[in-house]
Length: 297
Image 1: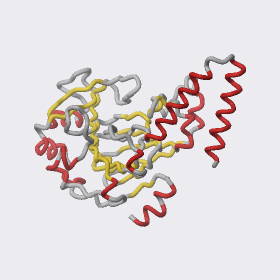
Image 2 (image 1 turned 180 degrees about the horizontal axis):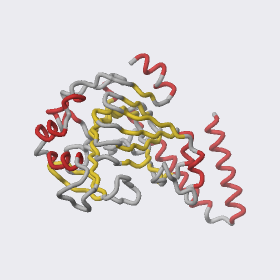
Image 3 (image 1 turned 45 degrees about the vertical axis):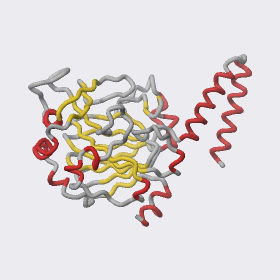
Image 4 (image 1 turned 180 degrees about the vertical axis):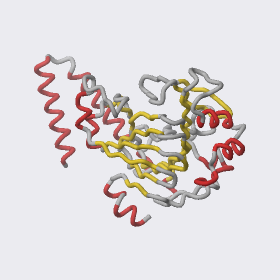
């Protein structure tokens, strides 16, 4: 923990840890084992006719299945039963137990029978723990580019996952809508709609079983499952706890000071819009200069 804090955490750079001892899950978490142990648990999953899922266009639907049915479908290439089409894709992002959506995902609470199989690398203090999320996806499932506001440890238990990352410094090239990029296909981007995207520097790695990727808060990331696989995310608070929105159960609501600042920016834009174009552009330039000075300081 001390080496991590000094050499990685303080520099806010991603880190890939290879062949980490993540516990018995690496050997035990087969489709058959998980189906048997977690069989009757009800899970809410994403179902999509294609692998490339978009939270912006909502090209998927949500379905509730027993865990044993979900994981067998997710592991299959072609389905004998389906909702949308016979080669549809499945994706599970575990959530809290509260049906009203007011608690966070925690493997120890939602899936205690398999929690004992996992050993988390001790990279942070226990008091800063936020959530532990199980992620299971069909081959080819691609999760949209987005950022989280907390530090994140992505653990690959089985399968292979490509992860592409973009620095917070390149945010202005990613065409954000909230915390998500509008550029769906990062491998073949629409350069007419998103001409600036090609200026973003892309970092890429392939996770295999036993690998752990540290993704600092605000680093944009996009994942593609090369094959069916199981992974875990562990999020923790790296800012003073009072800066986080207490209603945030996913770790993607902007810190309270940032949220207020963005709200103030929107109010400023509305105020400037009543001015003639020449005046509006003049004061927008002054505002940009002030923000740039704040950035440099």
